[in-house]
Length: 484
Image (tube, rainbow, N blue to C red; front, side, top):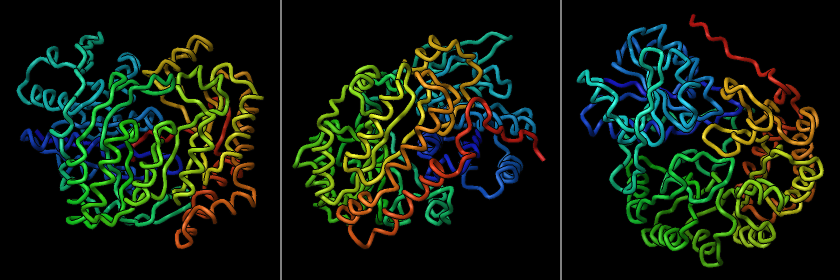
C-alpha cells in the first residue's frame, strides 16, 4: 500500500523545524515490509495547504498517517480534517505521544479512523497489512478504532527491546531540506554547523516523573554503541553531516555505554560537533564522562532541572537532589560545554515563593542559557490525573495547550501572576552582565555569535518582551480549519 506520513503544520515560533525521526522510523519499517511510504513535513513547507493537496493528488495514498505530540495535536486534527475533505475515502491513522490519551478523546474527532498507542514500528506494518488484505483490526495489538459508535481498544503492544533491528532508511527523506533554514525570530536553532541531524540512540526512561509520558513502560532500551557510531560514520561519509543532536530521554543513564560511544567517536576520528538538547540527568555524570564528551566534540547540553524547590522535586518524583547541580554545571562549564537548563513553573500546589525560588536558583546556577515553560498536563501522565482531580477539567481541552499560556493552571497563583512570573524569569536570567561574562568564559570565541546572541535574544523576544505570546485562559487563537 501507499502510505502518506504527515507531520502537521504548526506555529513556527513554538515548533522547531528539525528532521521528523518518528515518521522516518515508521517509513523505514513500511519500506522494508514492501509498502510504499512517503513523508510530507508540512512544518517546513512555505504553503502547507498546497503541499498537502499536491501530495494527495500526485501520490494518491491508500492511507495517511499523522504523528503528533500533545502540544501540536490540534494541528494534527486540523490537517486530518483537510485530508478527509480532499480525499474522503482515505483512512487516517494518528500516532505519537498524544495517543496516550483515552481513545474517546481522539476518536471523537471523526476525521481519525485509527489511533496507534505506544511504539508504532511493528503496529503500523500489521495495521497496513490488514488494511491491504481487508482483514479485521481486532487482532492487531496496540491500536484503538471506532466500530458502530463504540471505541475498541486492542491488547497492549509489547515494548520493542532490540532497537538494533530497526535502522533508519535515510533515503526516504529529503535531507538537504533540513540544512538550509533561513533564521527568523521564530526559529533560532543552536548549532555550530547547519549540516546537523537529530539522532536517537535509546528509547525510554526508567524514572517516574509525573509530568512525562509513559510510552515505553518506564523502561529504557538501547542501541548498541557500535551500531550508533556506525550510523554516525555513515551519515558523515554519505550525507556530509557535521553535527549530531542526540535527543534521547536519558542518554547518560548508562554511563559505561555513553563513554563507549564517546570513545568510538574519538577512535574513528570523527570530527563532529555533539549537542544534547533533550535534557540529560544531572546525577549521571563523572569526571571521566565529561572529559570524554569534550574530546568527542560535545559543546552543548541541556539538563532537565524543572524546579529549584526540593519539595516540588519530590512531589513530581524527579528523584533529583538539586544540591548536586552547582558542582555539575561548574564542571561542564570548565570543559567548555555550554549548559542549558529546563525549568517549569506552575505545578499543582506550587506557590509564588517556590516559583521565585526556582528563578533565583536558575539565575545563580551558572547556566549559559535557560528555558522557563509553563506546566502542561500531557495525556498519559500522572500529572494530568492530578490536574483533573484539582480542577475538574474538561477532557476536550487537551489539544489546546501551549508552553506560553496559562490554559491549565493548578498552582497557588492566578493565571496573570503565573504569566508574569514566566516573563520575570526570562528577564532576570538574560538581562544581566554576569550572564554575558559567563558565556564569554564558557563558550569558545568563534561560536559566540550563535551562543550569546541568537538563543537568548530569541527567548527574550518570545517570553519577556512580546506580550501577545502568553495569553491567559483559553484565548489562544485557533488556526482556520477551512481549506481554500
